[in-house]
Structures are given as C-alpha cells and as structure tokens.
Length: 114
Image 1 (cartoon, helix red, strand yellow):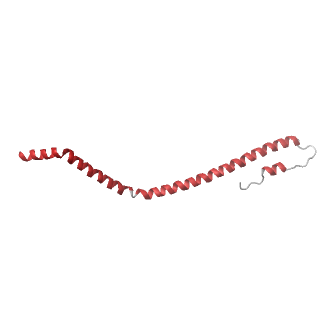
Image 2 (cartoon, rainbow, N blue to C red; image 1 turned 180 degrees about the vertical axis):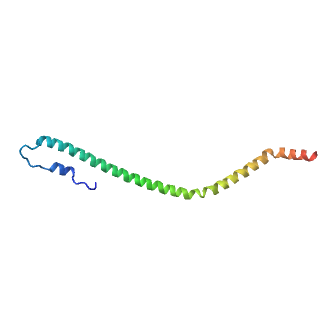
Image 3 (cartoon, rainbow, N blue to C red; image 1 turned 45 degrees about the horizontal axis):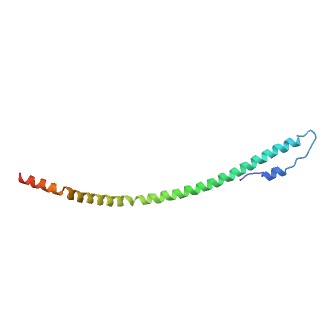
C-alpha cells in the first residue's frame, strides 16, 4: 500500500499524554482497538485485491496472445476448407454417377431415339 502513514502496529503503540479534563482513556482505547481491526481488514483486503488484479492481468495477457495466434491461424483455414469442400464435391459427383449413372444413361439413350 503506497502513501500509507500508519500501520496497525503504529496505532497499537501510539500513546497519548493525559491531561485534566481529557478524553476517557478507556473509551479512546476501545475505539482505537476497533480502528486497528478495521485497518488490518482493509490491509488484507487490499493485498487480496492486488493479488487478484495481478492474476487477472496475467490472464488477459494469455488471452490476448491466444487471440493473436487465432487471427493468424484463420488465414490458413479457408484454404483447407476450400480443399475440403472440393473433396466433398468430388465424392458427391462420384456418388451421383454411381447411383444415378444407369438412369442418366437410360434417359440419354431414350432422348437420342426420339
């Protein structure tokens, strides 16, 4: 924590001079005990949040790298998809010739007769 003037230990060790008609020392001590507990809680929470922030920043860096790699990888995909599509079309054409070949030949032959 930057710009923090007091630590919980500083608060615990702080002693005040007593004067006549001053504040009730027991009440002040009880209040300072509460302040110390809150201060320690905030310090722990701040440390936890800093650690979480560091973890999330690392995660953002990892994901940014993955996106960058993914963008360079997308240019190669259409080429492979095009070859895959061509293979599928060839297979489909062969299948049509095999299944419908006899019917197509019969239709062509009938058309030539008339």
